[in-house]
Length: 433
Image 1 (cartoon, helix red, strand yellow):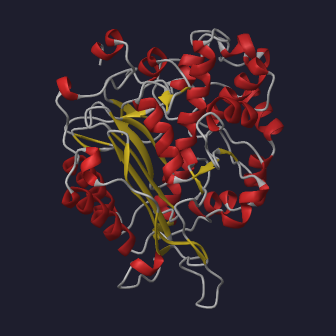
Image 2 (cartoon, rainbow, N blue to C red; image 1 turned 30 degrees about the vertical axis):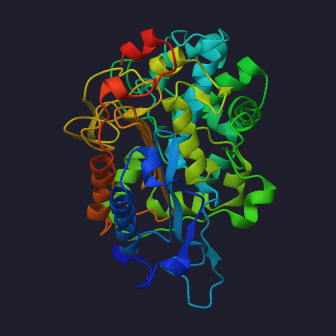
């Protein structure tokens, strides 16, 4: 076992033969210049040229128009350890890619939909819906606490067998009997996996439906999604993208950090997500598979006040409440970095945040390790960057930052008086942002 290694892929000089471009609107339709859109795409190409990502898919909408919807590379067969004779599968804009932790935001929005219709209340204790949860300091933990990463169970203590993640009933049993690490609401600590399973169970008990069915019924089908669900349906298995361990890999640094956040190392995380059992199951915090265009479509719906092409998914008021900050910039004891959260989404910041410079109004989510999806009301953009190289530290970092800089820099803020009603047609709601 190597203590330190660098893993990158070979990159051709000409990227056009390994690029897939879907239908795109002219830059002017989104209030931009062609050179601005090209500058953003050039930054994405430079990210691919670092060799850290076998596939990159990118989708940019501005003012409701798809200006970029492209993929580069290979969904399978072009990892750092693959040989030249390995069968390759070309990347497509429709290739299903695992969102990893960006799945949390979708699960959170399903909770908000149930809150909107009165089926649950965010201030209710989890134990109101799951009586078994009222153990060892968790009796008063609320749905609000879990959505804001203040539930006191950021991870399960002790060594976790990877096989454990394929047994939902055992995971829930362990969570029910786990002792809270801190009092509910007292500490901000990113709940990488744990909260998702509890919130998913709440949704299933309230709706009396499998979580995947509820997502299809309330979001995917009304929005015309092709592949947007927990796990991967059989018809999409032949085209799903595999994940690869890439970049600088240090057991002393990278693995220690990932074990602190996820409870496992990089190699384990990648192998689990390429396992068919992971694709068969439901992991509410980590295993929604979809394309960059479709997760971008979801954020476009949020940006448009909960409506997409005439289909009402949630009310503008619900979108507004779900994206309100729950605190200022606060040190996260899991991620070991200052963070801002809403009730589900991660939030941007000024002068620089997760989604680039001057993105204090932006909301979205990161996914392990270079998946970034967000919407920015000030710029009227929804963006999805999905990658299959699981680099934590590597040569890709400057290029990744440049994608964020170029996206924010080339998409100028829109004067408030000229913005569309980003949170719906209700002026009362629009005035609150």
